[in-house]
Image 1 (tube, rainbow, N blue to C red):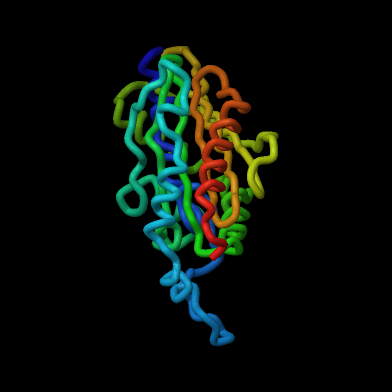
Image 2 (tube, rainbow, N blue to C red):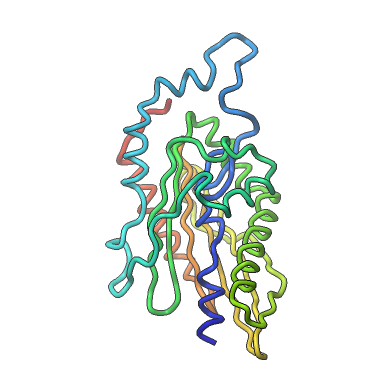
Length: 258
């Protein structure tokens, strides 16, 4: 049973892949290449991006991520922040499913926290991205919270868990993975949450793993807090609290609207 729990809880997920959407880890996407030349002869997104203080933006989003001190006593760091871009194979699965150019999915301004876990097989992590403008962030948030994104989340989880099961060599059967939205308290400018349920069976034992993702837009930043649990879902109010910590830090950074 312990090995089964480890497989369900330890599998990679969208959170580990730096959610794929047009900008990245917090997951939201844009509808086209960010550096396309505008038809009206105005300033291109690329030119506008040059005027951004990318170093300051990176520092701000890095500082906003969850740290071990945000978690209750007894929790510990179990994994470093997930690599972004091409260093994370799971990210490519999600980007392909969403039909997005990989370089559009992973631009500058991406950050991810370490993953923190309790003795009860629960874990929490955070991701965030600073977009070139609030308009781009709105578009990315909309795509990241679309029905298509839900389907791609399931595809990513099933592909990742399947690889873990195959590598284990054990006789484990993955039942149908499902995803559905959750009701959450309003946070930031926009917020939505989803829950992925992963039933796994082995030797007549059944274990259900849960991945909750709370996606929040605040200005031109989109963040995601992910919580994993086995047997019963993570406390949604705690996920909201962790997201609020990140949002408050972003607000305190006072990033210009750009």
